Figure 1 (spheres, rainbow, N blue to C red):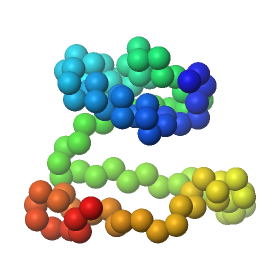
Figure 2 (cartoon, rainbow, N blue to C red):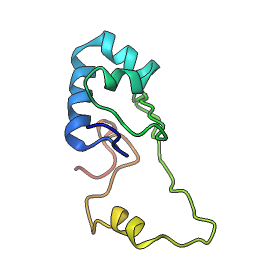
Figure 3 (tube, rainbow, N blue to C red):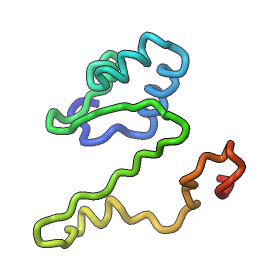
Figure 4 (tube, rainbow, N blue to C red):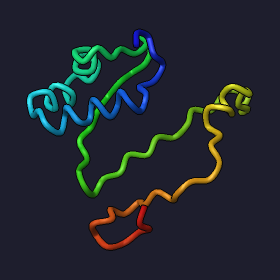
Length: 102
């Protein structure tokens, strides 16, 4: 899977499963995600930054899209982000008893 521009769902499931069962791998993943996933045979494009962070329970990372200088998305970019409707993602952890159940 050399030179991927993103990590696919199947590869991500492998990475997260390994991190959940192997504390040494998890520590390596948090320190150097690119090297850790490469050890599983998963590579991404050199110009893609890869960083894994541990869920701190009360912190949510929200990634905002970059804006093109002209402000418009290309048709290809629109295709990548268009997905229709899906379940709302709670901003409050479910275990606190608030937010919609998924």
